[in-house]
Length: 293
Image (cartoon, rainbow, N blue to C red):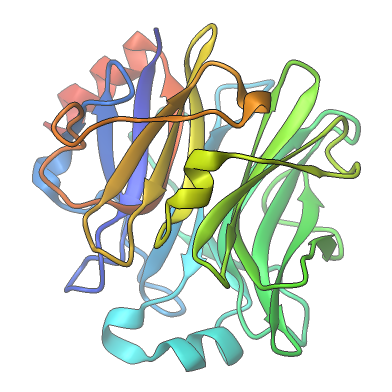
């Protein structure tokens, strides 16, 4: 079983829209680091970030953390954030999860985009580059767009990656057993849809999931593997303001998920909002625990 690092923001309160860290030895019980205070602070652009996501370079010991350039808490409303928001993402880098670069802003959104929300990335082995993807509202509709980069500094021209008849945001992708599984928020009914495709840019077919179909008022899906045949899916219960749901599945293609009952998992003292979970080594876990205790 792996150890995990959870990066997230905590809400619209003072300093809530910055990057917080928590660690776990089992993927369902997390310990807040840095005494529950932010670890990374964006003092550029909108001076706040949401929806952080972290990933490791597949060929070297280097990590990237990317996030939405947005601070709703002090300077705006959702209409402005969607239609006249930032086209940038905020990026940090590190070799050891302790010593981080300064944040930098990189413009990835199309000129006509009203926003760039919830950026995530997956390594595209065919292009030997990272595929970064996010939600943008263009001509009144949210779709998922993406771009390739090898260094998170220079990005190729963005293009449309996913579109439905309804608005969609908050996509996350995991590759498993020859398929790419994509979880996305349906903005119309506030539920999560699950799709799979044999190639990253193939035709995604929807997998019916009774459990996901019944869970409304959720967003920010994240999925991570905890054992050989066990994955956890976490969903931000934004409408209720209750933090995360935790679900499990033994087969991503089945659409069958089990919801963990309240009290059977502990995500720590901080109420966590839309973030990312990454597997880490025992050494990295101990380093984080020692440094940020």
